[in-house]
Length: 273
Image 1 (cartoon, rainbow, N blue to C red):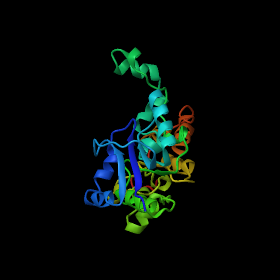
Image 2 (tube, helix red, strand yellow):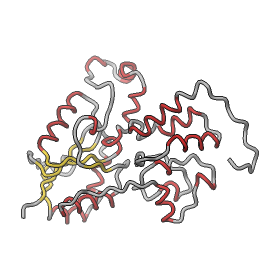
Image 3 (spheres, helix red, strand yellow):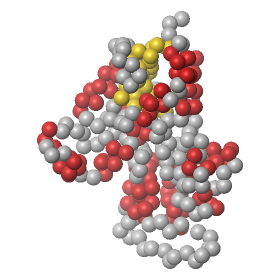
Image 4 (cartoon, rainbow, N blue to C red):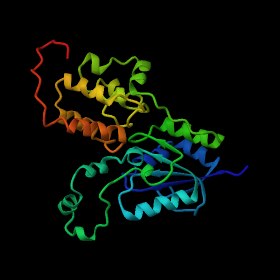
């Protein structure tokens, strides 16, 4: 039986997601005995050309050249899997999508006329068909190992889709939204982080992206009751996963309410939010 031929490709990103492969350390060496890691610039200068059985792609599409390259990756690969927040939801660089692209270029670069950049930074799903998406900033190593095991077994990769709230229940965490009145995004964020922030009694800020079917409108109203302004609620959704459809639409919803907003009276000490 031939080995699974794997490639790891980097686009506009910080490299943190593909670094999770290297963070597997000894397990990666064991994996290398069972698969052929043919193309992985961060790990080796020995780069094999396609076709590949599986290509993992990190980053977002931010330049015209990257549009061409991701289409080439799709053509060379039997399966393409997006890994990380940039790949699945645009990432931090997608924040530019909410501003004036030309103004950003002029502010950052002395000679912006030499910069070939797209107006919007977008996830791979906007450009090609994906076979799976591994969410998170960065993805969880445990989920990555599970995905690799599924691929080697020839089954459809499993990616958990429940909310962070369920992870909090499993860990026995006190709910920071109910008990502390913190504006936690856990109810609308997919699990994968191990509920790291709530475990430290901090509110979740959505680094694993929107959970399918999460009620962002209801959670926004809850935040309003905690004393957050529509602008503050907008910025809660407009962060790492700002361009993922659910969070993008939620931020636009609360942006539209900024004009008519009247601040609520301040809470009295000890009053239920």
